[in-house]
Image (cartoon, rainbow, N blue to C red; front, side, top):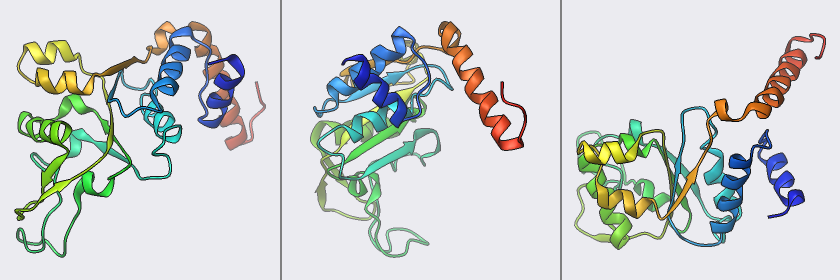
Length: 210
């Protein structure tokens, strides 16, 4: 990707910085966007991991289909793959397609995937391997076709060694790894970010601009 294309992407997604590692992450995202390969974005909290899935989806053949972001730390255990049938449980009204039904033909972004409980990991692995799921209260096997992009700030190798994350699921998600650099390694970018935030504060509170 040339410099002009890179700058267009940064402007479109309000990405600030010229760090080599950041540029490499964006370059990889654009290269794999046209494929259906699973992507795992790794990086500390606050480094902008959530931007990469949008770049991938918006530049993929699925861009006109649904983009669905899921915070894995907030998913009830065992429900990641399924919606429910009418009357499947007390309080259920009507039917629900579930995440994979809603995002069929599109892209699902699994944020904080390292926080998934083990039981939920097993259900997710089944969907990734077979494209099949069964809604709660149902017996019909349903098919889904989604692109998976996941992100985590967890040390996945440590989580695997401690038995907190399935190794087979990790390798299924980590087909294409993308590493987002921490801010402390983006020295010159910190200055650019400071100036941006200062300008935004000046505009909001009508202060003298720096």
